[in-house]
Each structure stands twice: as C-alpha cells, then as structure tokens.
Image (cartoon, rainbow over all chains, first blue to last red; front, side, top):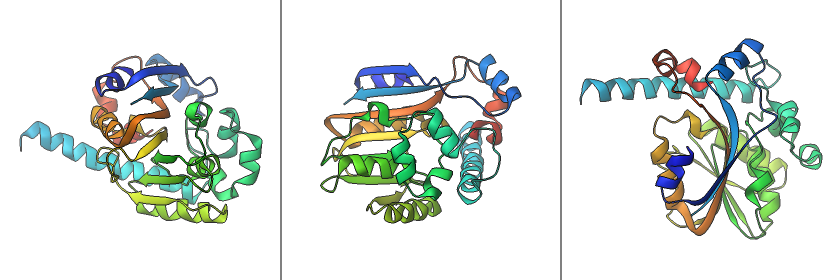
Length: 46
Length: 203
C-alpha cells in the first residue's frame, strides 16, 4: 500500500504499526503472523 | 471478456457478498463473536478517547469494526470537509464530525446502503449531521478536489484494485489535503487459496 500511495501521487507517506491489533482466535492470529499480516496506520499528503 | 477478467469479476462479486454479510452481521448483532475484536473492546485497545466512547451512541460503539485509530494522526480542524471511506456504523464519522465542528462537513461512503442508513441514524442520535453515499471505494461518488481529509479504517485491504482506490482518494482530495488510514497489510504474498476464498479475503 505504501508504494501504491506514492505512485498515486501522494507525498510525505508515513506508516506505523498499530500495536493493539490482534485477531480474537489464537489460530487466526498465528496464521496471520505467518503471512506477516499486521495493522498499520498510514498518513500521506496530496 | 477474457476468462481471466470474467474470473476476477466473479470473485469480486462473491467478495462483495461476503463483505456485505459479515459487516452487516456486526452491525445487526454486535454482541456476537467474530474472528476480530470489535465494539468498545477494540476501540479501547486502539486508544479511542474514553470521552468519545462515552459520548457516542451505544449502537455506533458496539458495531465498531475498525483495525486501528485513524483519528490519532488525522488532525481534523474546525471547518474541514472529511470523508470516511467505508463508514460502516458511523463511529469514526461521528468523531470526525465533532472534530470538524458545525462549520465542517462529514461525508460517509459505504457500498452497503443499509450501513449508510445506520450511520446517519447514529449520527443524528449524536446530534450530528452527516452525508452518507452508497458507493464503491474504486469509484468514489464525490467531486474532485472537494475534501480536506480522508479517513478510513480497515477497508482498503478488501479491494482487489487498491491502486485505483488510492487514485480516487488522490482525485477527491484538495491540493495539500491529507489522508489518515488504518488498515491491514501482509508482508508476504497471500496464497492463491486465500485470494480465491471470499470468506478468508473478507476477513
């Protein structure tokens, strides 16, 4: 997404991981972690 | 139409149905258990201000299904026009409306018309007026260069055409306008079995 934002013309693209995000089920969380799935906050300026 | 394009269109159609079903269920049955945290429990984990959660209509809080807190960096100012992409049951739009004040304007976009009805109802209960338009994030039904801030919470990851979504956000923002979104990203290419499964993609 970061790259897509820049390629769409946005500047000052910033991102940070959302620390409190987890899936409810441990098995889902484990599967998500194996794919590097995480929640992020992103900001950008047109 | 080529087979590949037909397959993509078919998958998008199934995905749309699954997303409608899942998030409608969160809105209709917020006491249910889902694979993601939702409601006040989730909002508190994402550092939504207690004051907001106490002040917002309980129905909007209970149906909250975001993945973070876009308000932490949105820095919405009095009088600004804010667009909430995928406004759901309306909690983020209501908070944006408080921050933009009476001289500001909040526009919700949701591809489920029932969610727009719910969001506007919740906003009215909070004493706020918001527009909400049925529409897709790949084709946002808003004039070009008309929005100061775009917020979104856990929605863009659901699109098969994310580049198009960001091009649309760029189109509707005023020069110097900004976006503050929270969303799910994957560090690895998802397997084709996940991509082809609307239930997994929608989650």
